[in-house]
Structures are given as structure tokens and as C-alpha cells.
Image 1 (cartoon, rainbow, N blue to C red):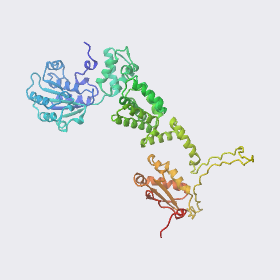
Image 2: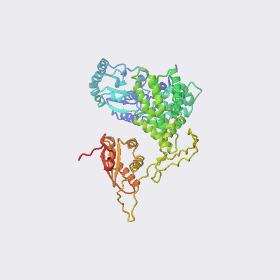
Image 3: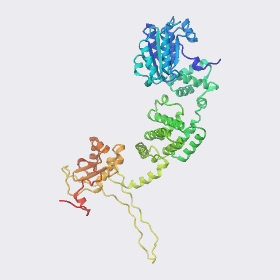
Image 4: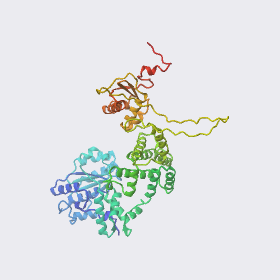
Length: 565
């Protein structure tokens, strides 16, 4: 009868366990020296060798002729444990025996001496599934067991095991197997089984297994029906070829084509894909893109393997880091809300529309995403998304006339040339054609330096455009989260009075940031660059709704203001 590969190639000695040398070497030395603990707990993810090492240890402590700490697999004890004829080695599934009555029955049996073996060994798998009462019943016998008794506990969720149990056990943590080593092991097994396995396919299986040997052997077993196991055959066999439709959908998201994205989602939904499962797969794709963008050199061992590396490279080059984080945050928010809606499909569709156009989101992370795209576009490294190109071009043309130049002065657009317009007078008299001139913003205030190098003091008030230019220049050097606030006079206000510069900031987060010396230094440096002389910067709280501190001449222009002596 055919036997599954993960059962056929289950290790029988410690030396055959791969990737867990830090544990197997310790256990072998304990067997050789006779320094065995009465209770062990093995911790790790699925398929990393916890139950296998527990069985090998149970054989090793009962073996008549251990070889370098390994069981000989030839003596009557080893053969009896392998074929199940020796009943002193008991395996329990805590998921099926969670009650206190099951543990009480175990305690009643454990006090008896072993019938055939040297030690009675209880292997309790998934021990975290036991109830609290069962843990309490197990506590005393684990603390002080008879000399002939040994407990080996295995769990995938350490946090669910009470600390009172953990403190009485010797703990061993099993690691995930690296992809490269897992692929080498698969190639070795395939050669022994006569399976034509390509190296690239072995790496693909290793990534899909996520560090678990049992999962890797199960995938290889499933793919072995093909004459040659390739990457394409692995994806088709595992049902991952459909990920190409998800890749195409994400490409439409990057193109800001919400209509095409919703149409592709409709096809995926009609094929039977659950919206929550779809969002989970989309989240996995974004995660792989983030890994490739953040760590391109070591991404081969970090990505899931569900998507081709060339596709991930393409997406990572088209997105900024802030955009990737925005996509991940949007999908995860949709996943958290999807359980609260009667129609999960709506949550998925809203998520897709938001991903296609980040302007529909109001979070800080969406603003950072849009700003990062603008910065990339201005540096010439990327193009604006289609949904933002029109609005951003309008904003760029509006601000082109007042963009600061490299010398710190405003660049004025060339005036529009005069054109001849036809006469529209009812009397037929020719009217002079209207002239159109470009609006020139006020020139910034400059003070001339004296021959001696001293900064002269002037009685003339500075230009009203100086404060705005100082804030505009400082804005480019401030952190991203402060730039929008600088443009809002209700949050940040700058008043220049001779050699004193009053900076009024709304109390709270902004005021705390402006209290930092490096932030105030930015404003002072830009003020000196605009004015031509150093000023004294004074920071003050901006009272909501108040006029703030203004020059007396500025207030006198409002006739309704009454001064009380």
C-alpha cells in the first residue's frame, strides 16, 4: 500500500532531523550522559519536528543499545515502540481529550510501573487545548512524577500554556526550516523516489511550505503525479495559478482604473471566492511587494512564493513605500470591518475603490501616500496616477508663478502677449483691446547691508509677503506631518516686527513640535535668508479665534476696532 512521503520519510533518529541541531544535539547529550528531565515541552510551528523528536526521545530513553544518543532501532524496545506493541509509550491528542476527567484517568494509570519498557512516556500533543481544570490536575504529577515516568508536551501556541506548567518543564523551541535548506532536502528525497524535480520548483515548494518539512513533503507528494515538477506545475497543482487574476487586478489598481478593478473582482467573486479570502490574498500580495521594496537582496527567502518575483519587482518599482503602507492599512481595515457587515462584498468593493483613488481616504497615511507620489513625480522618478494627474496639473499651474527659485526669489511668469479682439460695441466704434497682465506677487522685503557688515535697522515695515515666503521656504524642510499645518493660518501664524519674529502656533501636537530647537532653527535660518539679517524668533501659543499679536498700524485699518484706554 502506498504511504505518504511525510510518513515514509519521517526521521527515526535525531541525526535525520533537519534544521533543529540546537535541540537534537542537546537531547543526544542528555541520553548519553543520563541527565534526562522528567518533563519536556516542545514549542514550534506545524511540521517542524516536535512530535517526531518526542517519539525519537521516547525510543532513546528505552533503547538497550543507544548509538551516540540515538536509538538503535534494532532492539526489542525500539521495534516494539515503532510497531505499537509496547503500550508504555502513550500518545494523547489534547484537542480530543481536553477535560479534567481525561487527565485524572491519566494520573491513575501513570503511577503503575511500565509493563515492558524502562520508562513510561506520555506524549501530549497540542497541550494548549487542555482546559484550566485539566492543567491544574496535571500540575502535581508533572512537578513530582514517579522515577519511571516522563512527560513530553508539544504545542504550537505557547502563550496558552500556564506558567505553572512551563516552569516545571524543560523548554525547547523549534525553528522554521530555511527555504534553501528545505529545497535541498526535497531534491534529495525526490532523487530517492525517482521524481524529476527542478531546483526552481523545489525552491517554490520550500517557500509555499513556510518552513514546515511536513507541508513541503505533502506538496511534493501532490505534485509528483507530473512527469516533471516545474514551477508552473506546482502553481497549477496547488491552485495558485488563479493568482494571476489577482495580479492583473492589482495592476488595474496601480493604473487607478476602478471600473476594471471592480469588473475583475466581480469575476473572482462569481468563481466562488469569498470576499474575506480575497482580501487576505490581496494582503499577502501587498506584503510580498513591501518585502521586495524594503529588502530586495534577501527577499527570496522572505516572500511567500505565491507570486512570481518579476511581478513583485514590477509592482515595487511603481509604488513608493508610503503607498505600499497605505494599501496594506486599507486592506487590513477592510478585513477588520468585514465581519461586522451583512454583505462582505461591499467592504471588498469599497476597499478596491479606495485603493484606486487614495483621495477618497481621509487618514494621515493616505496623505503621506499622495505626498510621496508628488515628491517622486517632482524628482522625475515616477508619473502621477491617472486619477490625480488632472487635479495636480491644475495646482501646479496655479502655483508656478509663485514658486521659490534657487536664489530664494519668486519666479514671475512671462506676461501674456496682447491680442487683437473684435469689436463688440453696438455703435460700431472700435474699442481698445483689453490687456491682460500677469499678477505679480509682492517682492520680499530685503535689507541692505552696510559697508561695515552690520545689519541696519529700518523704520519701514517689512513687506507683507515676507512672512509667507519664510513659511513657504521653511515648509519644504519641515517633517511631512507638519507641512499641511503650516499652510493653515488658523494653526500657524507668523508676524514680523523689525528684528523680532513672532511665531504663533496652535497648542497641542504642533506646539510641541515647534518647541524643538531643530524645528525653530529651520524657521530662523529661512527668515535670515529671506530678510537678509538675523531676527529674534519668539514662540507663542495661538489662541483659537483671537487676533493674536499684531502691529498697531495693521489694527487701525479696521474702523470697527475700539481701543479701551
